[in-house]
Length: 232
Image (cartoon, rainbow, N blue to C red; front, side):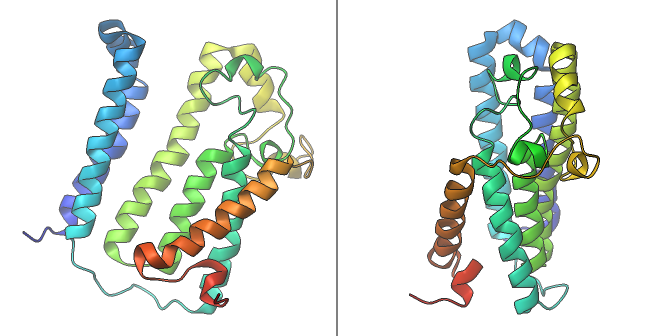
């Protein structure tokens, strides 16, 4: 059976919507009924099922004509932005107050490296991934899927600020004062400084960027990143 893009849109809304509903308005009641472990298992199962629905629908939607032409200029831009996204993602894996168990470090965390750029480096890495994929693959079904990832990341980051500040007003608000939601705003306002990146962020980000873009060809059939121009 061939599905239309409307089914992909429904699956994308289900994927994003269940994340927000279970993480915020329903979280307390679900945890009360299931306990923390039960809630985590249920949350993960719903996320996996709705994500699977979205992927199945994506694959079933026929490939449409691109909305704009994509040349080397757009590929070069997306390649550079994906390098930045990779550094943000790897840098966010260590000493991130937003991660589970990291809240207690918010009041004394340092806005250095990726956290000087934004207090949500992981979320912005996902959003930049989605933006780059729309930029170089501007077809309807990819815009829906990548758009869902962008909305989940950026709206989720805003909800995260609200949730964390209600749990630990002193610590999280102090963290918000020295960081910014949007990249580079805190640096422009001199609340943070650019630099002091941890080695794992730069080296790990570079490695992830090289490996992920190299794997693009065998996984999708399209060369990506520098591998569009460099052939081993």
